Image 1 (spheres, helix red, strand yellow):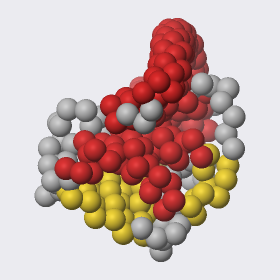
Image 2: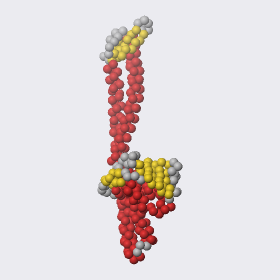
Image 3: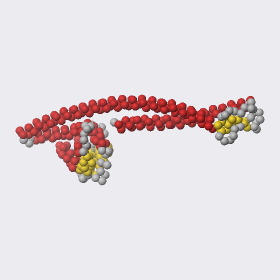
Image 4: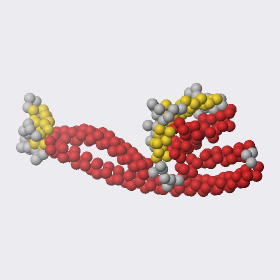
Length: 321
């Protein structure tokens, strides 16, 4: 959440700086143009005063017949003597001081405005983030509570199955029930692990091929009805064992459940990429969204990349680089 807050504030500051810089640039040129027009009128006023009173020589900043250096020169033709040109000079410093004074006032007002906007924005964002954190904490606690109760329920069912197996032996129906419970545990594992903030991550060098083969054992029933093509090679990745199993279980499970007839799983060690493809190309296929969102969270944690391609087939690329 800290990273999100940083980017929210940074984007606001950047937007304000760029926006007000562009406004100030336009305002500066407009003020410069207006000030130059005012200075011309001021110089013309001194010229008219000089015509009325030839002894009028201007003021400290505005001079009749000024030197050429350090002055902004305005030339006017004497109507009483047309060949005669009267020059009125305005000090460059005077022009810059007036322009700078105006810009300083504008910048000061903008500073107060930006400061006010930042405080208001921060107050709104902080309030919104607190609400999100409160809601997120409530949802996390709800998931943990549900998964904990579900885990207790499944543990009880496993005990009952063990007792039934002692009574009835290796019955096929009991085996299917046991396998169904195991798959249910695996389905909820990713929810539980993501909800646990204090979960300890143990990074290991894991052989991706071995874990893919292990995950495929959970889907014997689905594989019996589908054509599976595997091209697996040894490739070691640095991940937590539980996270890797959750990623593979969900990706392989989605591919198998939502395929029409075939699934292709391939490991490319040179590209360090896992490719899972099936013959489903519908983007809005039910059941294919939340699992990928959860997998994406785990992938992002390790800064790996997950990409999807919807063309003739539905393909998932997981890059472990």
